[in-house]
Image 1 (cartoon, one colour):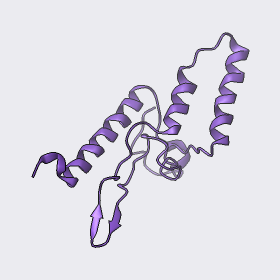
Image 2 (cartoon, rainbow, N blue to C red; image 1 turned 60 degrees about the horizontal axis):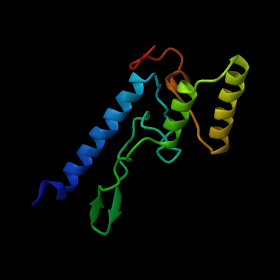
Image 3 (cartoon, one colour; image 1 turned 45 degrees about the vertical axis):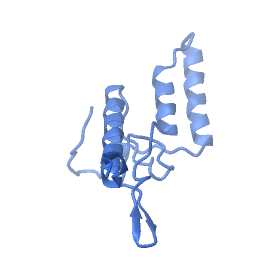
Length: 126
């Protein structure tokens, strides 16, 4: 069997690609988005569980992990790295980026939003 025909190997490689994209996101200053799985895999910044499909008696691993960056990833990079002409343009432009994301139904839930008060912080990037 050709290794590229191995579904389990392909799933593992897809997970490594997703993990690498996740860590690059942190390098760019992006926080986790735990709402991304709810939003059709809108961000590599979630901790995704593999999406498996049952086909008869078989488990299909071909779509276990998303490929490429998600819609939320594009929003957050645009928000973080767009340059504006002046302070007023920046304020209005950033608000428009968020409105556009909201209108697309994109949600954002990060560590600060999901941690219960008093719970240990096991993953802090502050």
